[in-house]
Amino acid sequence: MTKLNTTTNISSPDDFYADLIAAHEGLSKAESDAYNARLILLLANHIGERKILTEALEAAKARPSGTD
Amino acid sequence: MSKIFETPLYPYHRSADQDAAAPVRHPVIVIGAGPIGLAAGIDLAQHDVPVVIIDENDKVSWGSRAICYAKRPLEILDRLGCGDEFVDKSVEWQLGKVFFDERKIYEFDLLPEEGHKRPAFINLQQYHFEEYLVHRVQALQAEGKQIEIRGNSRVASIDPRDDHVLVTVDTPEGSYKLEGDWLIACDGATSPARKMLGLDFIGRVFEDNFLIADVIMEADFPTERWFWFDPPFNRDQSALLHKQPDNVWRIDLQLGWNIDKDEEKKPENVIPRLKAMLGEDAKFELEWVSIYTFQCRRMEKFRHGRVLFAGDSAHQVSPFGARGANSGLQDTDNLIWKLKLVLDGVAPESLLDSYDYERILGADENIMNSSRSTDFITPKSEISRIFRDAVLDLAESHEFARPLVNSGRLSVPSVYDGSPLNGNDDPDLPPRTRPGAPVVDAPVGDNWLTDLIGNRFQLVGINTEVPASLDVDGVRVEGMRISSAEDTDGHLQKRYLGAEDQAVYLFRPDQHVAARWFDYSENAVRTAVNTATGRA
Ligand SMILES: Cc1cc2nc3c(=O)[nH]c(=O)nc-3n(C[C@H](O)[C@H](O)[C@H](O)COP(=O)(O)OP(=O)(O)OC[C@H]3O[C@@H](n4cnc5c(N)ncnc54)[C@H](O)[C@@H]3O)c2cc1C
Image 1 (spheres, each protein chain N blue to C red):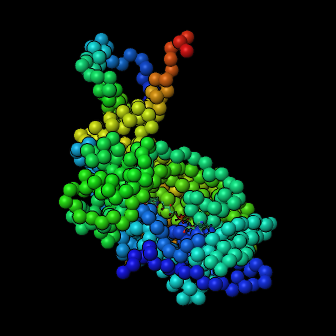
Image 2: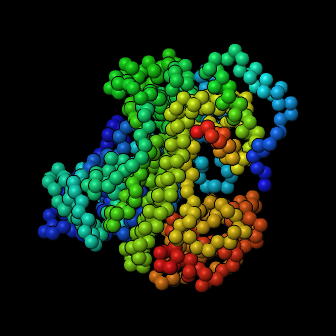
Image 3: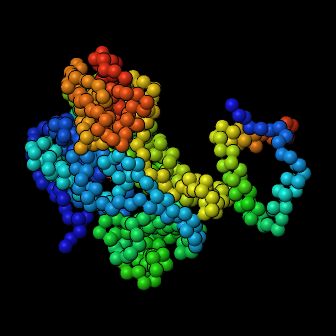
């Protein structure tokens, strides 16, 4: 059974991160929010598996220990 | 010519009960001649249970109310002996279009599944719906059945006793009392009966207002359901256009929360809004204009001793998804056969507790679905609005986002999973027709399965022999053998057998599956009938 992959999986992480930030360049806060929402929906559909999506929804909630 | 909703259909007549020395006892009294009270009365009369329906007025529904009915309620109307009149008059639609801002973002074809007698949905004004139910009541009266509608008679108080309910009725000629062994309260969302018994009705109010208009218009809009999110003619809000028979069009315009209802309802404000939507040259006449706030709520329990709640009195939903009248018909579909067995003394009163289990399950499903639609149409937070708009933006070019668009999920019947009435299952048979599920229609020779079963316990042997009849301690079971070979499209095979060659199904009087097996066994059927009648 597949689980949410939280180990390193993106090749050239610095490039991806730069692309992500660049995608928001010049956008207003409202446009950025809308962009993020579209991005989440596209990625969620690509993953598809409901169990993994549920795990991701949970994983995103967790804050690093010691920060509450 | 006066309109049907202006015509008294069951005017007040003095009843002999009013002159009786002591309150007259009836097996069942129904409060309310709305769609649900009428359906309850018809079902009882078909079972030869005398019934009195009491309504405070004498006409069909007033104002813009239900227009859309799903397949399952049509099958129930068939069982009640009157489906054709509804379907013949109705408008059938299949294509839906969704607009966002100025663009059409996609369209969907409902593509109803083949091999069903009835279409997926029809549109019909609620006043016709009730009119046709009254026709059926009149036909039953002509056959000599004891069913009576007492118009202009208002239930003023109810007094539950141990083995009956005492009811006070106000009429134009004063009040009188009568007794019912059982009382079914189909008195609508504001249910006076609920208040008289001091019972709760808990849920959510959606902070939004909708202008609902029915207009009569000669227009060449196609017979489709059009839904707009944030259109230029109703900025930041939604709109709906849907066709009904006789060139009547239903229009819903979302107005938002902080509005002046009286102002918005005035024709001088309504007409420009409608012209902005329909075009400056559109020629139409207003039939009704109302402003609604929607709610989703239900009673904690639908059975309170000998008082049973059904329809809007028991549960209320927002209309997105057409679940109000649709689910109310499923309530009485579920209730009446049980009540009949209890009245006949063959089943214990506790059988009626399964009405609570099964229909609360249905109500919760409907409330969940219609809350989700309402939350999509009226996002309740900034982030929910952001995601909603993201879905709509993506839907135009990406197919995956279209199923996320929620302008109302049309009503499908509940499967009563986990019901105490469910009997044996053979899990190798198709899940869709498992115990608790409503009949899934299929062609049987020149007939339809839905027309062959119902109103009694029915054993169906598919490609295998079952006895023609059986008496299970006072409960009559009829049997019939059908063959999947006659259905060359394989619907029966696919829906009831799957990979197997034969099966035996036991259907309840409401056409839900009670139990199923590969082979017939009398003992197994007896056990299942006892379980399904609360005698196990
Ligand atoms: C805008 C709108 C759109 C809708 N669209 C749909 C749709 O497309 N599909 C759908 O399935 N549903 C729809 N509905 C819901 C549907 O109209 C209701 O679910 C349905 O009318 C419920 O029927 P009922 O018999 O339970 O109650 P009602 O229709 O409210 O009937 C109650 C009856 O009880 C009588 N009564 C009340 N108190 C007393 C008393 N004290 N004594 C005697 N009689 C009394 C009243 O006179 C009335 O006749 C819609 C509703 C609205 C408002």
